[in-house]
Length: 97
Image (cartoon, rainbow, N blue to C red; front, side, top):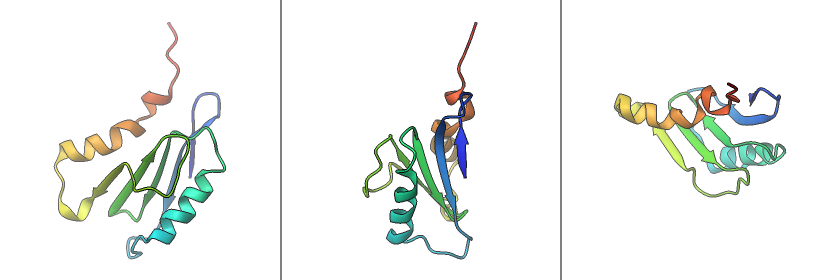
């Protein structure tokens, strides 16, 4: 799934898998290869619904994710909010006054 800003510029790429799928390095590699097609991306996210991995920046390499959230570990609300905060739509809206 591709999320765009007000100018229809791709800013977030979200790759989802079924919850029973264990995320592997191959999943990460394919996700980052797809993300590389969109040079304007600020974030790429890979998830199976339980495990969330987030990469920041426009040049995605095969490095480890910048953020990981494992919902099976019963994270605190603060931890969940911190993971999703960079992806909030308000960060990608142009503020005009």
